Image (cartoon, rainbow, N blue to C red; front, side, top):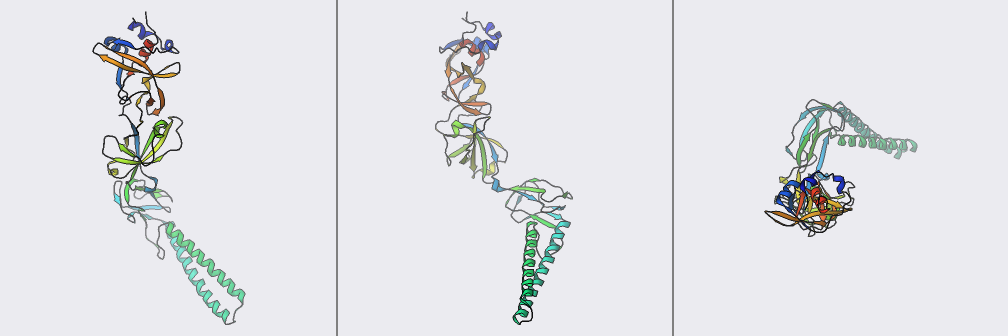
Length: 357
């Protein structure tokens, strides 16, 4: 028989490179307690039900907008606050800006110049038709009219980019909502001087929403776009809309994107949730500490029998398919099989013959 006290003080270095025997062993209840052995069902051992993976709620890119100051100025009014619902075209803030006044003045001057040049062109066309001026003068007048019209168009475009109405001078610059949505954040304060392109608000449409899931490659490869993906612990179902084409080198996982329409109002951007992967071949996720190695082969200690007096274990070779958080996805275990999740090093020592008399 083996001696528990001797086993517990042996250095871990003695275990390295020792082959794990394939024969089952039986441990008494006192021995299990001394080794600190704890067990759990493989389908539940990883801290989540079988087929579940962590996910993060995200806002689709096309539904997020930043409302920024088109020109430098001072914030005169902030009409909404984070959490408020807004409609497209609603005034969110007002900005007093000398630069905006300059843009308006330049636009008015360019418009007046274009009108004058058009009048000159009509006059010279009439004079040329009557033979009173040379063709060269008409060509010069026509070129000046074209240039003035183009310059006026450029000035009007500058006003439009700044959110200013043409044909008027003065007044604060109104910043409006580009979409229907909810104010997520306010990035400026009343009376603050801001530079051009400085963010004032961030707003977003919150339906539908995305769930971003990092799935082990072995699981991701069994999925298909369009399949339903259910959120764990709630009656909300989304649709798998994208499966990443690259693999994260650190975790060997693939990014999945799930779109949630109905039920999106129960979620919040940035929220951590869990999704149920319903692929028929979903594999158990178990703690990484439950996996030991024998001559480079990963093994898990499976409990094949147990009663009040003790338990029997076998060393089961498994194949590690990928990493998921602090757990690993394995092939070679049934979700309903009970495995050792603590005291694994002690079990390995026993299977290796360390401590036998």
